[in-house]
Image 1: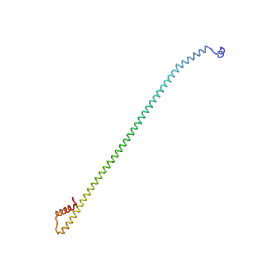
Image 2: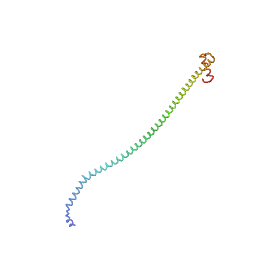
Image 3: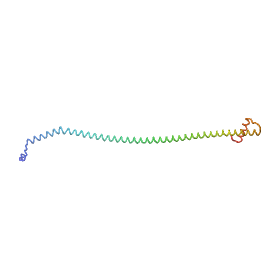
Image 4: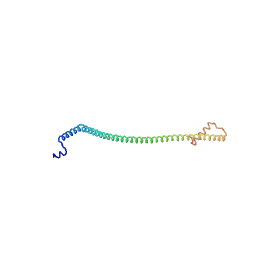
Length: 168
């Protein structure tokens, strides 16, 4: 084995020194490089965990807001339907009221026109009756050859009309 070690140029002191050198380098790397990098990686991992938790909370909150939005939209649609229904009902009520008022006004106009027609009819009848009575009186006075006084004339007209039942 000595021959193999000599062929490889193996020196025991160099080996020990190199082993100590490697141990020192490993200690320095571990102390000044590996620990800070590990701490940095742990902090990064913790930050990523917090970000994931924050994202999950934000997702939950977004879902809550979405549900609240949907509920508000549904309420708004319901209220809109209610308002439309109330407006339609109110419109129908107003339409009915307007039609009733128009019917009342039409009846009032028709009744007024009927009264006017009746009054005009009575006036025309009286006028015709007066003219007719005057003609009858003149004819009777010619027949009788005497003049009838206006009071007698009116009395004859009234009697005639009452007998015929034309004036109440």
